[in-house]
Structures are given as structure tokens and as C-alpha cells.
Image 1 (tube, rainbow, N blue to C red):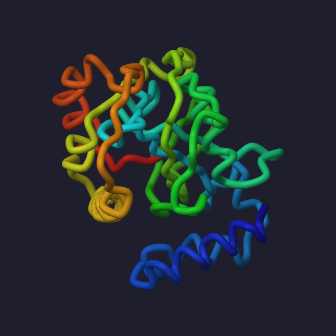
Image 2 (spheres, one colour; image 1 turned 60 degrees about the horizontal axis):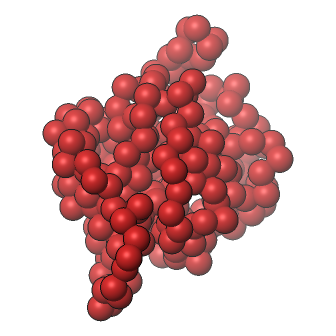
Length: 223
């Protein structure tokens, strides 16, 4: 996993060479720290998350995180038995939302849309001091119907948010994520095929507009 992640970061920096300074701490840890996946590593550790789009690419699936009290994409810490970061992220999607990884199609050939290092506040109850998360953010499309099943011990809820509202969220990380996602959506653009399914088009997406702008606006989307 360590060698694979090093390769993934190298490939990401080939696509985004101007971000080398932004990701210097992660690159250093991947070179020198074999415990970079361990949650107990307070120097910083790697997480993975996934932006799931509905079949129309008009909405994005978000969770309301209990600890951070905000709406964000599903994701979390990397399990020891994970074969890759995207597999770990899709496992978190299934656990937190009910959407099985087999019902999704990863985009960008399974590569990360964005990689970001951000600060995480101390959690004394967990024995954690201030530290950093190095989050690899992936994108996938949900092609099949599924029932939203929030993991209520971890999240307060799950919901679909209109992609344009998500892209309009302010924040340091979104300054990097939004243009990349817009480019990806433009590349995927094609005449919409008629659809008889409404399961992936949220009937109450509007209810999330003000909540998401307020809640996620307090911090960059991450894990």
C-alpha cells in the first residue's frame, strides 16, 4: 500500500505540478514515515474520501458528520486490509450511506481528483492531539438505485445535494476541488439519455442548500 500510494501521489503531481509545495508534508511522510496510514500517527496520516455523483451528474452524495457537525463527502481512515485508497474510500461510502462499491463506477481511471493536507483539531476523548489528514479525494458515479442507509453511529444523515450548490461552497480546499470537478464534468458532458429512474435524483435536494453552504463553509470538505 505504501509503494502504491507513493506512485499515486507521483502520478497526481505529474497532472498537477503546481501543487508540489501544497503537498510537501505528505510527500515527506510518504518518503520517511512507514506509519503514515496509522490513525495514531499525530504527525499526520492518510485518509480517503469519494465524491459520488448520481447518474445524471446533477447531484452529489453527502453525509452529515457527527463529530465535525457538517455536510461532507463520505470517507475516513484507511483500514489495514485495504488494497488501495479508492477501495478504502468506497468501503466508507458503503458503510456511511448504504451504496455498495459494486454499484459505482470510479472516474479518472480510479485516480484522485484532489489531494489535500488539512488540520484536524485535538480530540482528547480519543487520545488525539492536533494533527493533519492527508486526504485523497476520488470521484465515482452511482448508476444503480439504492436505499439511503446512514450509519447513525457515525453520521446524522445522508442526502443528495445539487452539484452546482456543492461547487459554490467557499473554502480553501474547494478552491482546488471546484475547478477540477468542473473540468471533469465538462469532459463527461454528452446528450442526456432518457431515464425512467428517479431514485438517484433527490426529491428534497433543495433542503440541503442553506445547510450545506453554512455547515461546509466553516471548513474545507475533507475527512
